Image (tube, rainbow, N blue to C red; front, side):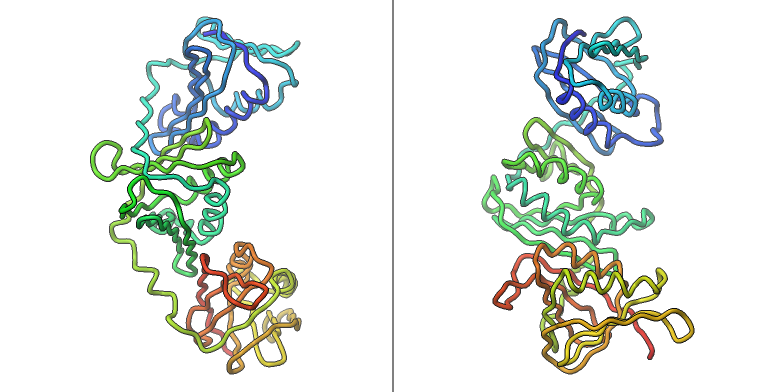
Amino acid sequence: MKFRVERDALADAVAWTAKSLPNRPSVPVLAGVMMRVTDGQLNVSGFDYEVSSQVSVDVQGDADGAALVSGRLLAEITKALPAKPVDIAAVGAHLELVCGSARFTLPTMPVEDYPTLPEMPDSAGTIDAAEFASAVAQVAIAAGRDETLPMMTGVRIELNGSSLAMLATDRYRLAMREMQWRPENPEVSMNALVPARTLADTAKTLGPLGGDVTMALAHGGAGEGMIGFVGGARRTTSRLLDGANYPPVRSLFPASHNAEARVSVAALNEVVRRVALVADRTTPVLLSFSDEGLVVEAGGTEEARASEAMEAAFTGEPLTIGFNPQYLLDGLAALGSPTAMLSFVDAFKPAVISPSGEDGEIVPGYRYLIMPIRVTR
C-alpha cells in the first residue's frame, strides 16, 4: 500500500473514525483504524462490534493494499502535521508517514485479525442533514446516562409514513421532536431504539456536511437489529438497543393545562444560572409565577439563599414549582427559540416547555417535559 493524500482530508477522516473507537478494547485490533486503498480511493474504517464508521477519501494511489494502525495515535499525528501533502506507505510490519520534513514510523497490526464490518441495512429514507442534527441534539439531552438501564440510554425513532419522531427520557424528563422526512416506502411503520451517544456523535458530524442524510433500517432479514446513516462520503452503523418494552412515554404529556407562562429564554437562562449558584446538585430552584411576573429562588433557611424577579406573561392561578436547575437549563437551551412557553397542570404534575413564536403561540414540533421536585415551604 502506497499513496499520497491531502493532509486536511486525511486528518478529518482519521479523527472521525477514531472518535468512536473503544477506550478499553476487548481485543487489541479493535483499537485500530483500517486503511485500505483501492483504485485511488482510501477507505478509513473503525469497528468495535457495536458501532462501525467508514469514510472515503480521494488519493493518488501508487499501490493498493491495507494496513491496520492505532487509531488514536494516528489521529493525534495527522492533526499535528504541517499543511502539506502526506505520503503513506506500508513497509513490512510498519506504516511510514512522511509530510514535509516530518517522518513517522508506526507499527501495524495483523489485517487478517480485524473483524469484517457489518453490511449497511437497506435505505429507509432521507432527511435534511441540518434538520436531522438539530433534532437529535434537542432530544438526546434527555436520554439517561445510567448503563444499568440500557433502554433509557437510547433515543427512540418512530417512523410512520412521512412522519418521523424522536423521543428520549431518563425518567425525570422527556424530550420529543416530530418532523417530516422522505421515506422510501410511503407506508413505512417502524420503531428503533438507538444508543443516544452514538446518534448524537453521528448527527454532530453529518449535520455540517449539508445535503441529505440517508437512514438505513432493516425490517426483518439481513441487517436486522442495526441502523445505518450515510452522509456524503461518511457512513456509520450501530447496533440497536432492545426497545420491545419501551414505556408509552407519549402519555406523559398532559392533555390540557391550567396555567401557562411565556418568558424570554435568554433572561430565564441567566436568572436560573445566577440563582442556582447557591444550590447544591440536589437542591431545586423554585419558580413562583403570578400576575406580577416570575420570582426564581434557591437555598434554604440556614444556608445561602438567592432570589431574583423577572418579567413573565402568566395566566392562571399563582403557582410555585421546583425543578432541577440543570434539567431546566437543558430544556431551555434545546428550544431553538428566543421565547419559551411553560405549561402547567399544578405544582406536582410534569410541566411542558415548548418554543413560542412572536405571536405568543406554541411552535409545533418540539416539547420538553420536566418532572417537578416536591418542595416544602
